[in-house]
Image 1 (cartoon, rainbow, N blue to C red):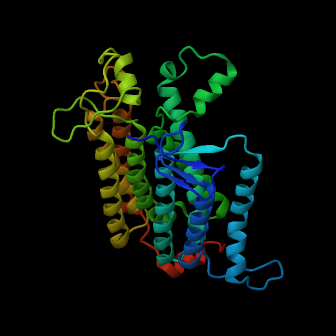
Image 2 (cartoon, rainbow, N blue to C red):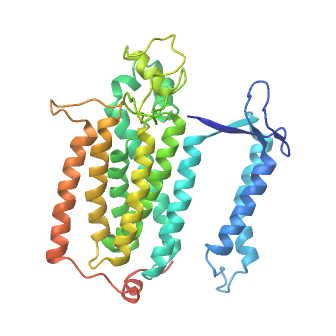
Length: 367
């Protein structure tokens, strides 16, 4: 695991310190280099994936250079403000957050390619992706806080401490099903506002959700959360003292406080990541050969719960509930897979044939 990948320094904007600073002995990169890299990446994205035409207030096309300037200007302003106003001069870049960013960019870009194949503007995908990202993280956090409330809010000291524990993700604390529920609600609200048929857009988005899950679980490994149960297999992994798994095992009495590392555990994060990438591939193939609108969503709703149900047997951070012998996620998985099977049967009996790209484009508002 590696919760902090590197640090960004404002006081040394154009320097790279491999061994960091005395108080932060880790790779430290100047903020100037980071800003320069962001500008290059934005230019690359604008050239290959961004909108090719944009109208100004006078109705005339905006030049590519002006489009790029409009994109990068907020970054430059934010960087200047941080440079002069921020009392904190060095910032950590967390592995979990980095993987979420990669998941978001890769998933939205990939979905944009599929959107174009069915006649939807890819700009629409970036809008819905942002809504799903924000609501998904919020829902996943809320689900975790409710499920682990006794652990998270134990010995809370005042409103400030309570708020900090609500937003603190450094000790883990996101449950996929919670994010899925709130993101789904947000998704339907988005479709209603933009007058888009939800099932048609869902077929475009679902493979990217699983791609994002694959990258996100790598973030879980870097953070130390979603850890596995005891493992004697050759690929078992251990976590250092003060890490999330180490602290949990010590609190449960399974590990001595003097232990330098945890005992070997299943790399459940890697299992989940591989599962996410495989589901992304399978649902992308279903999208390519689907016969009815909604089939990609139905297949994803069936396969993911099966994947999650099996992985829960090697997870070490959840316990069984309601005298079922199953974890909360396993109980939820049974309900979701049943709903997915029923939905797939309904599609085959009464569902609509997949639309042609021209038909879908006509039914969707331009952006």
